[in-house]
Structure formats: C-alpha cells, structure tokens
Length: 330
Ligand code: NAI
Ligand code: MG
Picture (cartoon, rainbow, N blue to C red):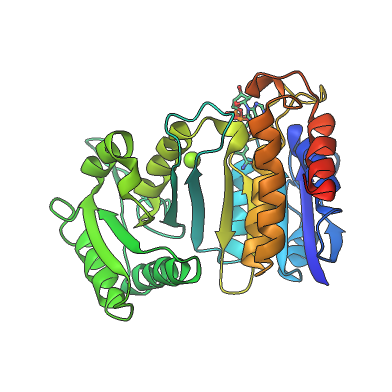
C-alpha cells in the first residue's frame, strides 16, 4: 500500500486527474489517496494558493500526483519543488503511435537540474540595465549527474550525455562538466559524452536518435525539454517527474488550459503518463508497462481519443477506453 497525495488543482487539472485515477483503479497496486488543495480556486476562498497543510500532506506521502494550477502555478509548483527539495526534473521524449510526433521510435529522457543555475532568482538592477547571477555548485552538479547515471543503469540505458556551454561559461559550466565526468568514473559500464547546448538543440532536430539520457542544468533543461515536447507531438501528451531523495511529484507539463476547462475535452494522456512515471518510480515496473501499453493501444487505434488527437471522445470516454483495454488485456 502506497500513500499518495493527490492535488487536482485548477481547470483541466481536475479533469485529467479524475480520468487518471479511474485508470489507476485497474492497476494491480494498492494506493491510499490523500487529497490536498492548491491553486487559483483554492486561493479564491482561502487567500493563499498553497497552504501549509498541503505541503505537510505531500511530505507525508510516498509520491504526489499533481494536476495543474492556473495563474498561481509559480507559487504552487515552484514552492513545492523547493520545500521538498525535488532536485531532478525528469522529462521523457518518447514518441507514441497515433500522435503528431515528428519522429517514430524516439525514446530518450532529459534529466534537468531543478534547484540552481540561472533560475535562483538572483537578479539586480544596475545603472546600465540588470544583472543575473548563475550559480553552479559541485554538490548539485554531482547529485544530478549521479541521478542520470543511476537512472540509466536502472532503466537499461547505455549512454549519458552532459549538455553545457563550458567554452563560454567557463567557470559555472566548467564545474558542471568536471563534476559530470567525476561521477562518470563510478559507472564505467555506461558510455558518457558531452555536447554544447547550441549543438544539442540542432541534434535534437537532425539526429534525435543519438540521445539516451541527457543531463543538463536548469535553464538549458527548461528550453531543451520543451524542444523535446515539440518533437513528440504536443502538450497533451507530455508527462514529467520531479524527484528528490525522499519522494517524487508527478505532473503533466501542461497547465490548467482554461479554454478546455469544464468541457471534458482535455486530453488525459499526459496525466496518465505521469502516473506511469510514478509507477516506475515506485518500482512497480510491470504495472507501469501494463498501463502504458493500454494507453498506447488506445492512441494507436485512434478511435476513442480526444479532439487534439483527431478524435471526438471526451476526457472520461478516453479514460474508460484505456481502462477497458487495461482490464481486458487486448
Ligand atoms: P496550458 O498548458 O494550460 O495550455 C497551452 C495550450 O495547450 C492551450 O491551447 C491548451 O488548450 C492546450 N492544452 C494543454 N493541455 C492540454 C490537454 N491536456 N489537452 C488538450 N489541449 C491541451 O498553458 P497556458 O495556456 O500557457 O496556461 C494556462 C494556465 O495554466 C495559466 O494560468 C498558467 O499559469 C498555468 N500553467 C500551470 C502549469 C502547472 O501547473 N504546472 C504549467 C503551465 C501553465
Ligand atoms: Mg518550461
């Protein structure tokens, strides 16, 4: 029995969460769900988007499923990542049949450092304009590199690639690159290499099959992950994981999509794939594959899918179909 905190949040967050929990009922793993509030709608009644009670509930759970927040997203999800020290942002770039993926058979993963780099929020005004501070520590660089290598080991991947710009950012990315290769020595059975971030952006488009596990810093990871999302067909399909030493938080990359909210037209696949990532994180690998395969079959058949995938099914109709395939094993 796993204790899972559930934050549906705002807009389509609530709808894709309901759809995903419906499918999880057919997975052979026992969950105890603890629901928690956060987001715009909660802030309207309480005055704050992320109450301490929610932080405590998430801290007390083995994993968290998060739908989406609206305008308060930064105050909710960024704060949760900090409070829980979720230092890894894991974004798979995987193509599924029946989607608008630009490539077939893509399957790599981006491991983004989530706590420092360009995004620590240290900016100041100067007479001429403004200055931002970029922080890279050996500790965080080694920690994210080690996660990348261990992840590769655990998932049977072969190559870990560091992405940086150490030729220009000589000191900060010098530390990052050096830390990466120091950790690489602990994993002699895995291949390690590195590329500059600009070249990587080009290779993502021209030779994406060359990547397996990509480890990079905060800003580069943010940009490359969205580039990766563009390669495999759009926001309704892209899951993510935020992982720390004690737990993981799993969320679709999309937001509350107000245009779709309340209409039952949101694609639940990204949230479902986030739940699949949670199952993998909990080492429920077999059930993760069962759930993923059921979704893949529904996507490939292309019949009971939402509008963004060219169908006309509602969020819950698609969920019911994924669950049916999961239960019937067809
Ligand atoms: P968004 O991801 O909500 O929507 C972007 C576009 O993708 C829209 O056209 C939307 O209709 C479409 N889309 C997204 N998810 C979809 C799905 N599951 N099925 C079908 N279509 C889908 O991003 P946007 O519009 O920039 O932001 C809307 C709100 O969400 C804002 O208040 C923003 O602050 C918040 N947001 C929250 C995030 C989070 O909670 N992690 C992340 C991104 C945005
Ligand atoms: Mg982003």
